[in-house]
Image (cartoon, rainbow, N blue to C red):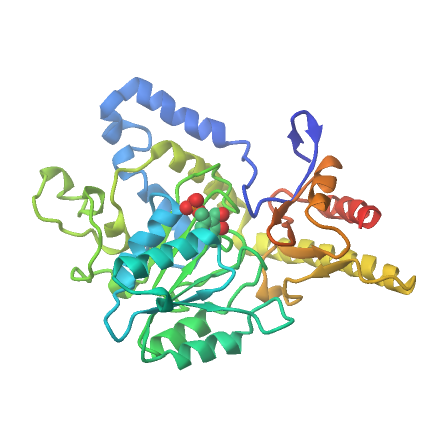
Length: 399
Ligand SMILES: Cc1ncc(COP(=O)(O)O)c(C=O)c1O
């Protein structure tokens, strides 16, 4: 159990900010030492030369995303990356200009999509928001596909949160990408809540573009570096428009200071600026732990942990209902492990936002998302079954 302000807590907010690996300080310290020792020469002579720092992360990121190394790169921050990807993959015309997203997508995604449509001169009808059916919390996959088919003559791109931040719903990215392609549109996903949480196979699922952050399940620290996926079929497409910067230029000629941009192969050509080494060092510390633990092992434990939390909550509900009381907790996340990551989104029936504070006061760190959801994410790297059991006891005594 982590200590926070000297107090032991049950930490279930890896969906917001992952905990710090014990090795992070050493990884960052190494770069501070190399900076002190080498100055500018560190770009080529640091133990992990900064000129190539992003490349030290590529294979491990590719594994986490189910991608080929050429398809991924760490760079910038999340919403900035979404904009950069939309510049290339949202190429609207007068006839084909619409974007499909979730109604309850994370606001930053909504702002990015709305402002991109506006930037291209389109009005409010450009963004189509998919809502769950009346009385339901989750989007039905058949409704997503039907919306794509319905908009097939006007759709430019589909951009969903691969795992929705609010409901914890994990979409079928392959099915949605296929439908988008059949409609003549591109398919992109925000992996903020998916990377390091669920098993992804972006290459095989034929996703066009995606961005991820590293401060949630990838434990790289607040505001840490983000990254992108661009499918291999665009790796050599020099004509695909992009907002270029010198770090996206072919690294072999970058320092010859060419006047004309020569894109590096693959996702790396979307880089704009030189690598934020301290942030990347923090990400490297975490990726090494993922490699050691093994993605499939983590996912196996994750399914068991979340299944255990679900079991405990169902038991709390059963006991209350046996006493003739109303069900105190509604789990809005799917009960199918294949349709969720580790997070369960809960509606605590008789309580509002104050309930969240009540849990925190009892040492349970969960978070609250307006209007009415409590999110709890047991993370396999650092949460135990005992954590979940103790949370269950506190929940039972508080609802
Ligand atoms: C789905 C999603 N999109 C966007 C963001 C915003 O990310 P950033 O502030 O790193 O751009 C978040 C942050 O939690 C998120 O969960």
